[in-house]
Length: 227
Image 1: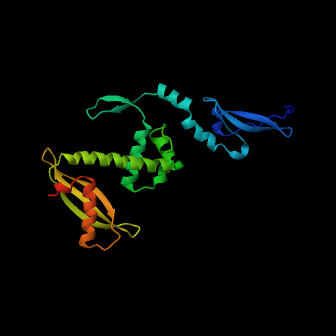
Image 2: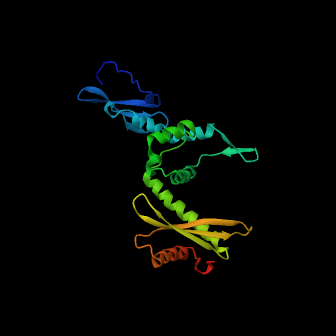
Image 3: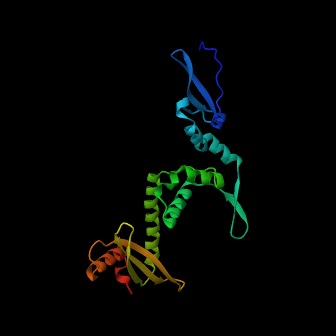
């Protein structure tokens, strides 16, 4: 560049982790990019694009994440008071996010919100990465399939099952029929499990109710175990 004009210093704190990339355009030196000082990845650096994308890169920078993993050891207490090494596992965090959403009836998109990410990374776990609503939807389906398989396996050892059922009205003015199984386990303790909630968009007569209950217990192989 033939320009001798002094560059104005960047004021954003995001630039402490990036090197500015300049190019000569129409005879003027302009900032066009930013290079991560750690992983050397090039990102857009035009002043008109802001620095939000630079700040979002830092938590997911692979070099910084591996460096933090090697330098920071985290401990977790066992129920008996002893401690063991704790390792952050994204798949566990995503499963727990599904459970949180289900228990509190939260929107599926909460995992990708800036507010939730800021809360988790600041107060609990700096390694947390955003989870898109599409990923959360797939995680929900996977988690449901796994839990259902566990329940089916649990019920194979049960000799007889009693059922209770009720009809609930949803927020969308749709009625759902619940089917709950009650049984005695191998330790002679009474247990109950929700087997399913089926949409019942027809008349609530005996035939329609029986049809939906039968379809639920058939899925769990309980047709011959009803007590």
